[in-house]
Length: 182
Image 1: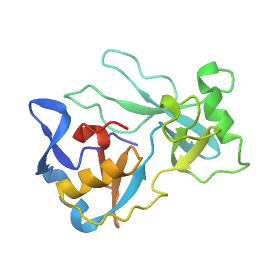
Image 2: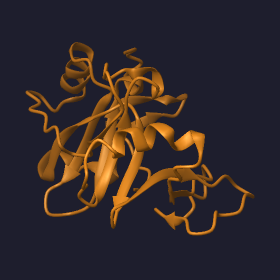
Image 3: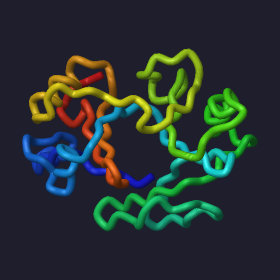
Image 4: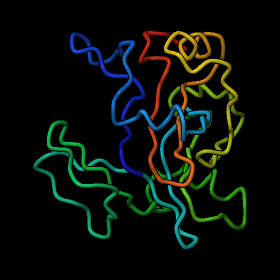
């Protein structure tokens, strides 16, 4: 799962915010996209009944043995995300397995790990869970800059991920992109 760009252009004076201008690479989202809820957790993947977590190899660091690259290294930010297999013997993977062990089988795909000990539990869950990416389709009444900002202001979600119908492109927009706190 590679890093995805924002629906709107970043503010050149404050890269943590967006401006009211569509990011040209994401114009497809307004005609070919379906919006889904972006959950606030950490990305995971299930592949062949194995659990993986996303790991960003920093510039100058070695890629862990067995890591699966998600994309080429970003020449600007240096982000180089990979999937690395979770290990039951590592304390940092404890919550991954709490969620994974809830079910006996999982479909291959990407998930968001959310729960009491993940990112402040903004999803208000009582236990750790793996939530399939793209599972919660949103019905947005207005796809304008103001309409999306209003939707994010009035709904307790982290953001929106647009998926391309019939393709594999994605883009996102988060509350924080508008300066909205959750």
